[in-house]
Amino acid sequence: WGEVKAIAGCGSDGVIVIKGVCDNTAAKYIMQLLKKTTKAYKSITDNKELIRSNLPLVQLPYPGTRSFDPTPTETSKIKWRKVLEKYGIRTLWSKV
Image (spheres, rainbow, N blue to C red):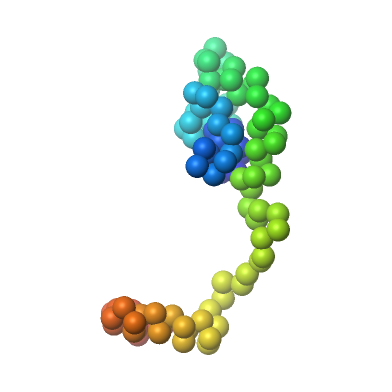
């Protein structure tokens, strides 16, 4: 997915977009299904340096982010129950 977003970009996340290239087009390019005669193919091949500079912005984990352990702890269970109780979501209470 990172490669697709590096090619297609994402304007809302500040990743520079290659005009005329969407996620589907980028995926086709990666899978070598995009015809070499298309404008999109030419746009992608003409913007290799941009794609290289986009790649670190879209790959996870993003440099500088903290790692976390998604394993539930007793503390996280207690906090989750408080949220469920606050919003009156009793159907999930027994699952926590």
